[in-house]
Each structure stands twice: as structure tokens, then as C-alpha cells.
Length: 102
Image (cartoon, rainbow, N blue to C red; front, side, top):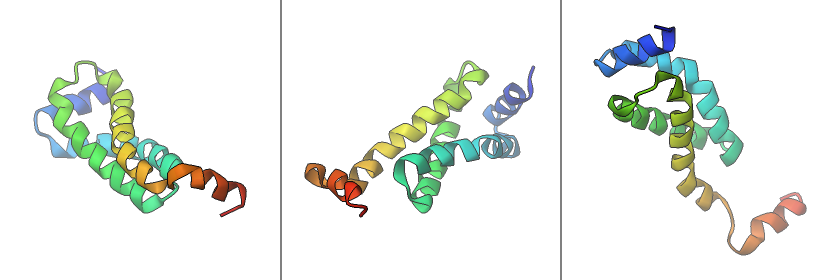
């Protein structure tokens, strides 16, 4: 069994330290993805924390440990949707502002 599969198996059985190691392994990827969309580091951290909580809750349904990164990215994406919508201005104003350097 590879390292990730072992850590996820332990986390499924309630080993919080094992899940902590999984979080450390994927936190830069998750936060970087959130930051690329939001351009706000603090919001990206918040989204990332929420995503890891959601990923922990869904662990019992995870059948393939190798899919964890993809599942986590999808959870981050879903968490970004409402925040990204509030970051943009209505009626395309954000595009006009961007072209003017605002």
C-alpha cells in the first residue's frame, strides 16, 4: 500500500494525525488553486480550510485513494463558486476596470 493510501486509510479510522499529514501534503495545491481564482490570500486560506473539512467528512465514501487530489480540487472549486461571484462586479464592470488597470 502506498503512503497516501495508508494515511487515508488511517484517517478513515479516525487518526487525526494521519489526516494532518494528508493536509500538509495537499495544502499548497489547494490554497494555490483558490488563490489563483480569488486573488485574495486570506479568502483562499479560508476556502482551503473549509475544503479540507469537507474532504474529511467525505473520506468514508472515497474508494480510490489516488483520486483524493482530484476530489479535493473539486471540493475547492465548489467552495470557490459563491466567493468568486461576490468578488466580481455586475454587468461586466470588472472587465472594464481590469482593462483600465483598476
